[in-house]
Image (cartoon, rainbow, N blue to C red; front, side, top):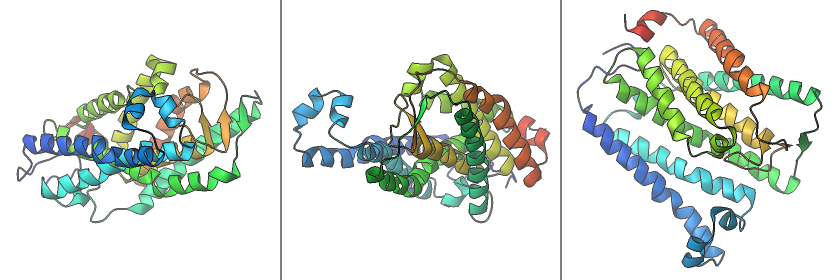
Length: 306
């Protein structure tokens, strides 16, 4: 058995076609089971199926609160999360844990370290932006909806980010590990796939090519954490903190998930200095800090396969 999480050496129930079956099952879970709650909600609102088809997405979502819309947007990914775990267990017939980590058990402490570091960095950037006092960020707290939003972020968002991490940094990372033992190749593939999965996000339409590059480099960053740390716990924590900040603390009206967050950015879509700082400062700094905390070694062997 190879000591690295991202390299598959076992041929038992690890054939390429099993990954295609799992991919089909996950898509079925997302597009099939994932849409059931929204269909039930449409029915309870008294909206006919014909009207639901005729209405635009924005018009249809106008019947629901922001929290309801958020829950209906997240549920398909939660369905995908559980479908993926079932496929790992019964299609690949492997312990689900092996797609989360190379350790003997899931290290939740690592999850909270990744969460805390990234949330802290995001908070510092937010404080700097508020100190500039441009007036574009306004107080948006709504006592009637914030507690429910907080519950969604605590109980549902970790499942949503857990699916994306298990799928991209667990399932796909191991799938590409069948073809190459070079971590650098897996990083590039993972970044391209992660970027591709976000091509339909409104951010891509608003920010153009920079949004695509940002998502791709974010995928490379998360994959690097996984490869060097032999598990998805750190990247899962980072991803969850990122979504907590964007859903609970500071949101805007042009992002893919609109919420009644504490603060609202009313500025027009633009590539701000914060996004650039994340790429050139925060990502490298976080890798450096985590490499010191967990004493990552064998960089050349993991990335270049030598």
